[in-house]
Length: 146
Image (tube, rainbow, N blue to C red):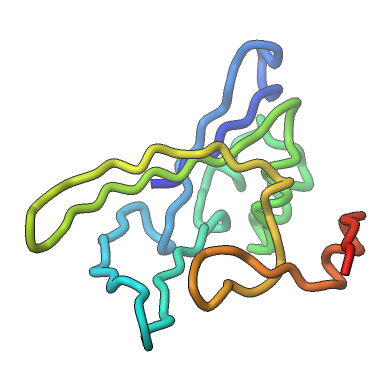
């Protein structure tokens, strides 16, 4: 589940958070896939997409600025656009998983991601670390010491 939280919109901008659930596969319901572990010789991962353009609220709700509603109508709205709204904005991603053999279950509680957590690059072959593209680092003003 992905939950976008934006503070600073609407009638009480100093105290209210606008909360919107973001579909992970273009629909409201997401079926949990069987994810094989990354191991020796297996470097494939399951990647979820955030389908912000599938949310009708961004097109129709006057609480959002006209440029956000326009981008949503044209289906060119980006997660970065939403994470820069209001006075604060973040995205929480919750995952629930279980071990097929033992039945052990775990809820992975969310880290609150902000616009500063977005990186353009590729995943490391042995984990989920992102190797940023040099041009993206320079555009963001990130210092790189090599």
